Image (cartoon, rainbow, N blue to C red):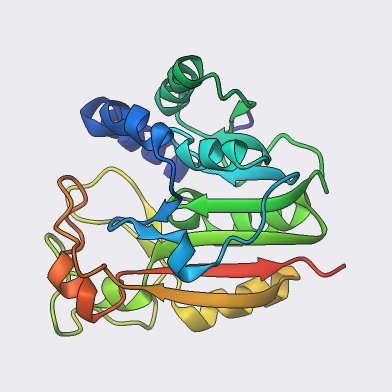
Length: 255
């Protein structure tokens, strides 16, 4: 693994703690889940149809954490590789591989500098991994490099609106609390980790400048039956039923 940035080291420390506190305990259930769902409120992929067919695809999950998304892909015939900067999260993923018999490569690295061959994958994806924890000016070009011509990029992140309405602590408000101008690298008070939250226009332009064709943008709302998440307190289910808390972007590398 190459030299990590200060932000990457901070995020590795943050997710080492998070793995001890809760992600390790919930990993086995996530790996065993039959249906693909997205985000804090488990929106079914079947209801948004963003991922497409994955059978037979070489896939790389950037910022895979405990790699349950890669496990879902493997169960559907893809050949995933999980990439994450946090050894503790990868150790949990390896435990889940032993439990389930679903085995695929796991690589310790930042998504900003991935030690894998160019044009090796048909699908690159990130659910709250590289999508918010890595500098998009670095990880998006890496995703582009890793994809074959015609390959797809899929990622899920916080919605821009939820960030603009977010106080320093607690769920989003019903009013704008922070400026959109200058939105990008975020340090939340009292938190170790560093997030990246580009607004729509900047993210769209960055994807285009990187070389991607933007294919889809789907804003996610909490299902009617959703309840507040036990650990992820940045959203409330009531707020997310009215405004989109999360969003999925899909882009393609031209042939």
